[in-house]
Length: 118
Image (cartoon, rainbow, N blue to C red):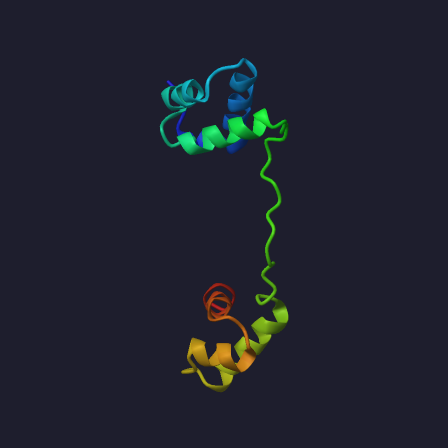
């Protein structure tokens, strides 16, 4: 019997997909093997088919590709200090007010208040 899913990393499961794909095993059979040996939450059928497609296209890396997008720059020390100062001036200030005054997205203000400032 296979160990609990927490023991198996994504990379190990992907390596198994790559190995079975290299042996020309069909994606549906690869998925069945993973579920049978590692449990149904190890990797979804969609993910197995996606990785098979990538390996077919010549991909060799098992690592996640870097994602594009905007980095989170609002949660820096400077903004944290600004939020902290506004809260010290008025302890009843609302997240929306802070967001508008500092021109920071409300979700970022929430993260600063709850995660960084406690």
